[in-house]
Length: 451
Image (cartoon, rainbow, N blue to C red):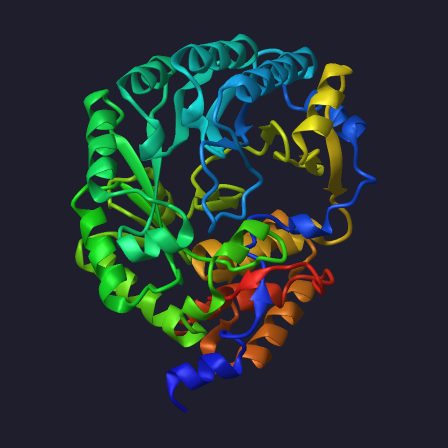
């Protein structure tokens, strides 16, 4: 059977599956997990340990039609300034509950468009964080950069705050594609932003690019990737565009008949993948590429790659705390998510408590299945030794689960006495294979296409 036909038979082109940046996934979160869980779990962080921090800035000057993130448009800084004061209140509240001596192994500012913040706002926010948990000596501080919303003053403010890595959104450089997705961003402005950042000694540069966009074909994505490669990014995320207008109404502006068919999406991904490979990048998991010197590539070689809400990471911290509207936190005990609406978020914080609206308390075999799924997503394999070391007494249960997967996916996986490995030809099925280990009902969850 032709390989494409095999992949189709196993559901690659019609399955709707999670991206598995968490397990259980966010659609499984329930309102029974609230602010008291958040407070208790923050207090349980070991004194003197390292944690990660995510700050969400849910504002954009313009709303790109392709984006499904929780953001709102603004033409002035007035609502941003009001939100910033609430965010600083939340940071101070976190500091009151956080045990002594905690430092940050990673900090990420995402959005929305964090670079909407003025230089003064950037300094005010970074000072508030430093007052409760300073960056560790080896910390990484990354910020999502919109090349249309960055200038030398803001770059200098971010550098003074300690930013070590910039993440530039690219999506696609083709003018017709950009017009169709509502994201006008020429190559020149992107190049200038990269040069400005490097001029400020921000030497680590990430870039995001999408496949599966309207009017994309193999020639167009090849041109966009080749232009991106001239900027020498250290790390690239090659995400599949998820067309979910029933969840993100702005996507209804994008004509569905201009979207590539699922089989074409696979070709688009493979075209980009081969270009990154030819330029010496290492594929990281299902959708990232990194230069050999990048910390993500080093972690992958060492078997230290992990998965969190930002995608792939080498962050060793067991605790990731999300601050801001809709932000998600992960603790050893479970997940919490803040209220998604900025009004509900602000009301809770101003009343003196965390705005946790829902979450999940780990129970049963959640952590066991989470580790299996993370191993598949990061390494394309599950090691029985790794799992049974982490979860003593789980050998028989895990072996049975792996055998069931081997029967389901046949020659796309290889099973042995040491574990299960996804064969290279089966790697496009990774999320579908991971779903096999997901014990939760996914009907109506609105997940994205598997490719």
